[in-house]
Image (cartoon, rainbow, N blue to C red; front, side, top):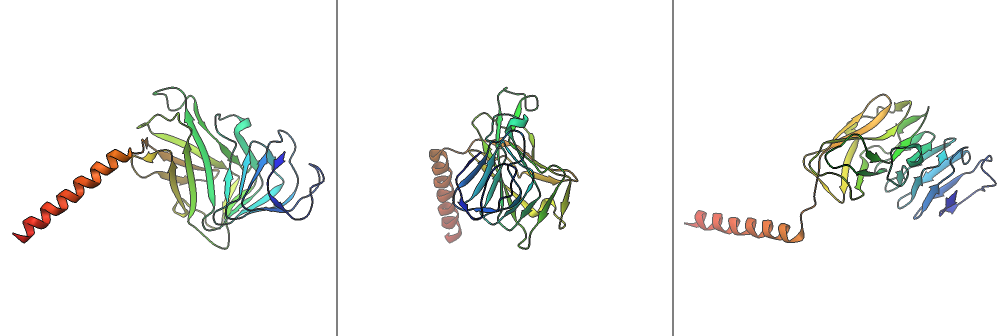
Length: 224
């Protein structure tokens, strides 16, 4: 594994316990087989836990501005899945998922998304409750104006009364054609959405100018 983090306690090897916090950096898990250790992982504002490795014996608490990201994008295979223990979300916690689709017009067969797999553990609310953020990142290959349903995380159960209304979806490198639909069911967290391009600055400027002109026209009409 490779780590960039602020540590307390110790890490001796993959079979011994560890207890550390991630703040302002990234813990990148890349171990393909056994879990990297046991103990609490605390992610603070600006910190990220990511990768395609295994932290299956570690409980993770995500504070506001902290991020958990499955893999690095590019595949729906196990090599793009971060395996963890139970995850507790506090207000402002972020799940970040990288998305892609290499076959034009085919939104299912090769849809790519990074995944967070909690295995036989629980996704739950913390003491500071929602909203929690799902950040969807286009790797540059999404087909615009197609409907996608993407699994963000899988788990054995949810706790603390966690529901879809606790989450909000945010788009990166694209915008939503209409509001995204979030579903929290018994074993997975999913988002259904339709991506559309981010308007060019010139387009935005023209729309703003048109709106300003219309406003002036209306005011003139009212004055008359």
